[in-house]
Length: 119
Image (cartoon, rainbow, N blue to C red):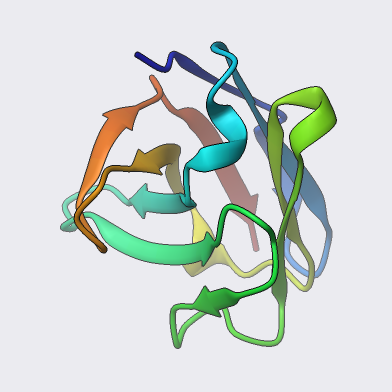
């Protein structure tokens, strides 16, 4: 069992930056691939970024590639999402998730943190 708690959201102007954190409980955190997702108002949930358990592999959604960076610190049981050059369309609730044994299937989710980008 893994419990996830996101933090770091807030209000920022377009062009600004934020860093989200996701703190995980459980001694097995380092064995999970992790991901970030978001859901904007009136929109479906969207994949943002993912990172392998060893941090050796990362992937990004097309809309954030080149602006966002995912990283993790297994010693701190934490995964991060550095968001630069933010745009109003990045406004959403951001969720971190832990991937289960099936690649691409996320089985544990946090409660989300709100990011609002003003124009």
